[in-house]
Image 1: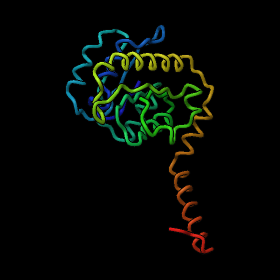
Image 2: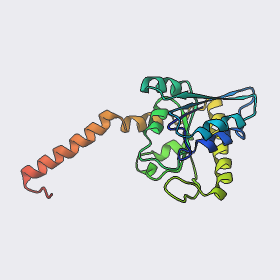
Image 3: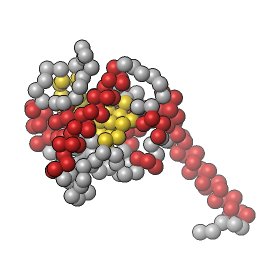
Image 4: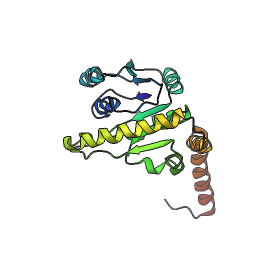
Length: 206
């Protein structure tokens, strides 16, 4: 399992670590959880000592280059992003491109670019967020339920990955391709071409 981002409370890291204590790991397997990113909250790192189970190892690998992070993602089966706030979480797309199943909080904006097929085929699972006091500060009373839901989602994705279910691989490829730089450039180019044609035809309105 992999996580990538700042090691901090707003990113949900302490509660991800807590959830690992309750994750159901497939029979005969061990869970290696790698956390990539700079440390913004020492308490989050200290919490890793609270996970007492012989079948789960937590490792903080620090800030990585894009190439090194890609290697971590390619070696992982599940990627988890438990953030309470994100702009555009491109790391979710990067994880999918590297072959990971994804667990992510139900962040605003995901609907605008994340294909519903990814959820329907079990490649992405969203976890309801706790209520927020501010932009990224959760309501304490909601955290036990959040941890429970996060743990359950990770357990399901680990089991799906363990069974190596391949259904839906095509939807992952099409989603990644549609959001790749080539496709984005083509969309922007088409917008400019349409604008030029409208201007030449005298129908363009600013």
